[in-house]
Image 1 (cartoon, rainbow, N blue to C red):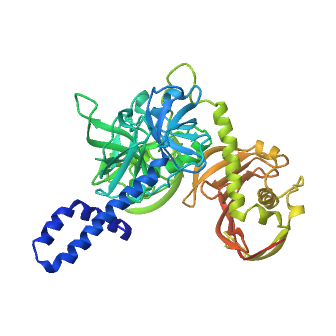
Image 2 (image 1 turned 180 degrees about the vertical axis):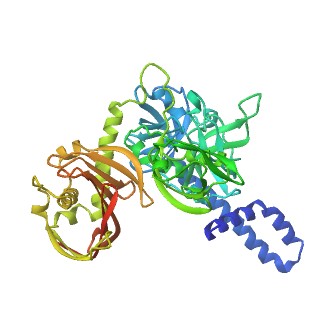
Image 3 (image 1 turned 90 degrees about the vertical axis):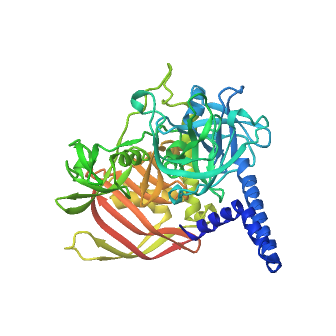
Length: 544
């Protein structure tokens, strides 16, 4: 447990045991009167801090309703100042025809929201509140840092008690971690809660979709399910929240109105000797092609040690389709690392006549907005519009190291000029295309170029969660760009070489800021999945 968490737990232990501590102090001697006063002041300070924390989080908590009525009912939370928020899929499932609902906040007003990306398997949906200013929002925490016993706050609208839209607040602790709650519907693929957080924080019907906070006011989960007393829908102190770290992987796609599937592995495991071994595997699965075989023991999967088949199945459920993972396998006593992409699990069968998973005017508009947002973030990351307007060229100095060890390193010393770099000749090399894309982003894509670009999925590059943008601007091959969903940095670029047909991939790292401009200092190149070379820049000089 880190120092900050120890201090928080200590604070709450003091508050819970305040009266006992005071009695013990009084029973000693008058010499301890100053300690009594000091302890009482500390307790009061903790109380005031908790009340202040609730006051800061409450304006972002929403009471969710069908448009024009009090039907439905649930909760949600806004996570950024653009009005994007999270709730449960089952809260907005009845709104999918029109993709519109209403959210009430503590200011006593209802605001219309659009329903964007949905997750019928994992029971999460993204919405965007419209015409609210300012848009109060909360920050995302790290649910992997939770420990059993940590205090949590839940907010929402249980039993639709919040007639004035001021949410109910409850306090409790984390009762368990890595819990699994089976799904429902078609093949149990709907509303599955995998690797979720169990709390005794009071959660009741109407809390669905509402936020679960840690004691720093950071969002650590979305409340969604409870275990009930058999004779009525009454809370018995066992509630479940979808972890925010699972949700983070899906957000770039949901923001763009995409329905993301969850992952399947292409293999199954069974228990053996305190671990798990592969008992079935598809011979055309990515895992098989990466080297996994029947009988292999899987010691580590996606960074977590595997001790049981139930644990493996629950943890697998937190990943989106096609997510990249690493695994450590043991065969004949020899350990080895493999990397592969997960496969996709079919969506649960949609209910009703219309396809709620299909494109809609709201989701098409959301996707266009998501592309504009990412380009804006990218340009801000590089240095901002005013600085970028002044750039006339860039001078690079560095080295290129080839992965073919028979080749020697090459010194790099070259210029790129703004007016020359965006044009692509018929015989453009992969480096020419990569340079042209860089300058297109520095200049800002034209309206016609942006219209070809769409967010198609979420992905992870170098531990950064990215939105994957695909498009074919005039004069360019079809491009795929991986842009960090938080700061917009370009992490990867991929396209097919027009002459050879090879798949070209550039990856970027080592970002450094000089004179207000930020560029990557390390660029790796691969052709058809084989690493070719790594360029490391010792100096990047911007002219302008």
